[in-house]
Length: 315
Ligand code: UDP
Image (cartoon, rainbow, N blue to C red; front, side, top):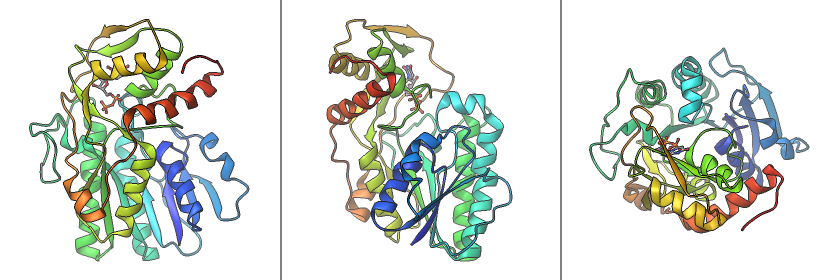
């Protein structure tokens, strides 16, 4: 297959490139590098099966040659990034989805949308199944991401229903691993960087809010299987092991042997109080569930960050 991955220089996008290339496919990456980085794909530059195009996917798209699949992963994905880049976030979720769907139609390509657990907003149902419609504040600071992704899902379903395009929608929950940006502001890189510097971890609010963290290799496997399935409606992809941010901070401090503890800072507006995927559908339809325990994934991620920070230390 020849596959286009938008946002292919980002965290998940670049791991998808690795996976598809290792399966013998050809990969074209489109990325405008506002949150992605060529450092994530530089190891692929020598491969004749790989091409990189620096382009904003909200503008007119032209790709020479056939495409068998398009995976739309371009978007700022961290709350501080979409606060910094609110218009770009809305545009890539809305216009970028429209443009890539149009390209998929032109090329008769299979289309996979990277959607998000943020479509559930600050959820009133717990855990979240795909049937839940969500509780999103459209005008809050996170609305630029949440509403763009909700629009993207609606647009993807419209292309499927109206144009008969073959589509998939992955609702991606919190994912972590190597190649997350150190400064992207999300809890995993923040805590790891703070712990490796021997600083207290910044817990927002009282730390009772929960998240469920999926290691990147599990996520990539889930997305890969979804693409190969025939499931058109959204599928949750994430790790159902839920914990409070306080517990998560304790774990990071334990693994890194960081004695500095935590400091509390104010809770960002509209920060979801709970989040946990119900993955019954993924288990059933994809035969998939995460296999990497959090402690193991964290150790791998910490050692990757350690190399980037250029300092020795535990573990
Ligand atoms: N968080 C925190 N300290 C940090 C960064 C994040 O306590 O330094 C909290 C944040 O308030 C949220 C959770 O960790 O409740 C996950 O935040 P993240 O930015 O990783 O992504 P989200 O799941 O909110 O999209």
